[in-house]
Image (cartoon, rainbow, N blue to C red; front, side, top):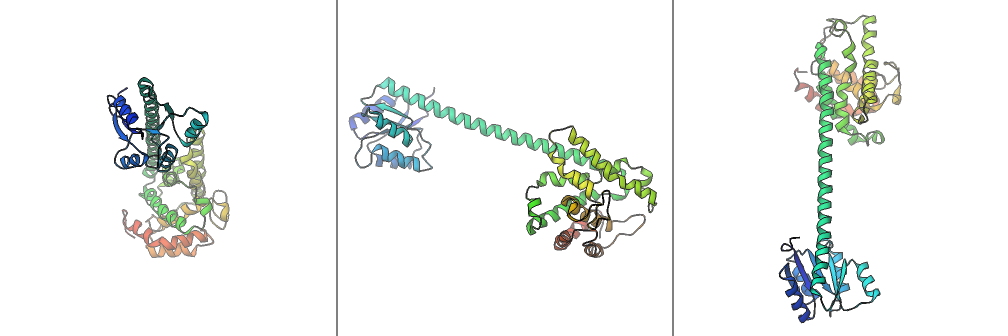
Length: 361
């Protein structure tokens, strides 16, 4: 054990004992002698020791009073204290331990015993520090591994979403834009707080990437329907609507095969409910009002807004102002009225997101 790096303050009002103790310790430690508790606290303002040897019976401030003051100061409270005492009664020792002393050394000093008590205590302190460092490093490793897992999960979601969008030639950039709209809507929703009980436990690291899967079921739709250069027939539209249930089934299947599926908990609601309508006329389940998961009600607004401002074979792109007007007029029918108010608060910001994308509005 390398003792040369350790600093020890020795507090003893008997100058003979103080001198003798200093001489015993000096070959092994950096020693700071203090003839009183008052001097101890003066030294502490300039030196942070690894251990304090503290006499009990001193004038002005005794050892019990001094250790109370040490333990009450957050700067010094973790410094181990060994009492030096001529007392040998059980009550005195118990009182010292209750006040935070780590050990007792009886006077007159036995050099081998004093050195061994100090060595043992410093070893314990070093082991405590090593354990704390290990715990801190372990926590850091867990955080880094968690970040790696989240990054991997998000990369998988993005890749799957890109595959879907690659097949759907008509909606380029839709996934990215709707994700940004959602981020803006949710930020305002949380600020306004109308659905605070539902949003308080949302983790945006999971929510926003999950939104990329809202149309994942389109991967099962024929290219002839997905990229048809015109309006769909009623029969084709019924086939197109199945992308919702196909997407939900795919997400649930992934969840069944992994214990770490918290990152998909929002994806099921977003994919399954973003075509439901507030008045119950949507699909696939015809849910009404707050029966529709909040995630789906939010995605519905982002999804429809982006569809309105985008060019399709069967329609021209609407201007931002016109798209906003359509959404606001659909409050209480297609959309949750509360969320429409949230949309109105940030519609300029959403318009800016759209205008900075690959097309102008």
